[in-house]
Length: 633
Image (tube, rainbow, N blue to C red; front, side, top):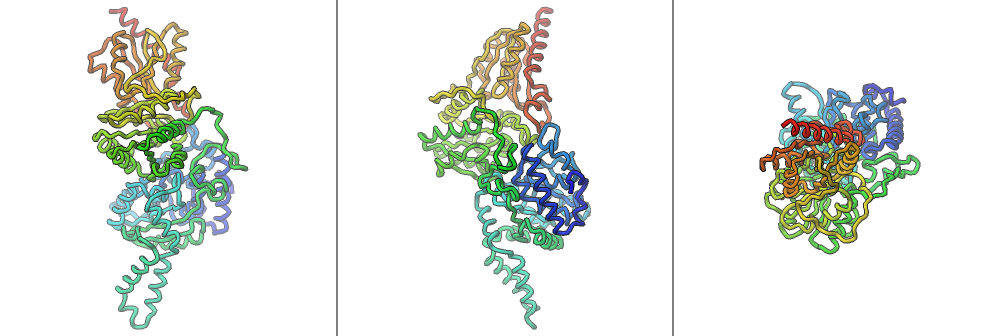
């Protein structure tokens, strides 16, 4: 079958199991081929091929609502809903999104880049259905890793309490991004090995009813016996105690098993927990054999060998540099503990975990817990390093404010993937953390210009004992600069001048510094000499240097790869207002008030006008207008 000819999934209803198997093989080959070029979340999607096919066979999307959690397991769903022809553009600029996207298809009813949201959204959709008197199925498909998120557990509690009609598909592949951790993962492990509890329960009920004269009189007792059997067969019975009818475990690659049990679920009332066992990466041996999450999401790779197409960058990755520096300090400082919410691979903490297993904690997809756990460690004199992506730190806002900043605890927050991240798009762009952290009292925020300054900032953070301190660092590799052998702390709140100039000043930090230096070169060719300042401390500001700049009465432009609203530029303007400075203009350049979609970072920056040429033009116009204004006075 030519997958690119599929317009909608209705044809699947006419296929028998042999035809479904052939289609599954076709889809796997298609995904392996296409993702070898574009990269993407290949492991999760190879694992849900049969499950997605049977869902579209037995249910009627979009009338029946499929909510994919996390959305990176929706590639097969996209193929079956008419988007296979766009897979050459997957996660590319202006191309197919790597997550469900409502404006792509009516079949995408919920957008999820972060995990653990589907059950709450499904509850909302189911309640709306019932209020409106409609009759459709609501089916959140949630990964076992996502189920560890606190929000998912809150939703399970509410759904079970309300007895809402819903079929929750638990896609259990024993991994999220990295191997799953925690007691809930252990419960699922017991369920996997317990056999089919419901079939045994039904057999017992059948036998009891066959007993002459007695069967009808012991109905209540039979229920109690079935409950006892439930405890005997399934240790914990976690989901049934929450109010769900538990079905499973079901082989997620067996069409007969899937169809029989899903048809059973369709006839039942109340909330159903449909437990499906799948194999992440199924059908592609390198992905199947992955034990640490390398094949969860990848760049391009060679199909024949499974070797990744290596980056040409010779510089270390930012995540690796920061993690290695933390490990170096931890060898001499026994207080250092590393915590991550399910991102040990992405945050390059595997080496730390291996060297200091008793001081490393992967808490699963539980950002709020990770943050407050770090706070608790700090109260006992430990030095926790909380490694967390900028986009996931958003979920810990209250814990950052209430538990860490308010109590002024010595926690080091490593904000990974700060700035634009590219292919993962809107839900993952790390451009909001400055705005939601900057107003928190006691918190220091810094970002290095290169990897050498980055390692010194780790030292700065670990030596700092006056409260919480955050170091932001981008996705990808450093610049390849020389690394000092001896780590030295940087004085808190100090900036540095990278280039002198008396006509204007560019204040920036991190990934925007090369752009600022290039713009300064372009301006110099036009006879305008600008100062470029590495404003490496976003909070506190270097008010001494700002005062010096204000005394020169030259135009200032702030540049940040972060949202303008409430960002670094806003902080500079606030300080200028506080000291009643208005002699020369202060302009800001950064991420506008809009969500930034997926694509290569340079393309995204160009789209919003953040290039060295744009910056040079803005400074040029600013200087010329200022000169004309002064001359007219």
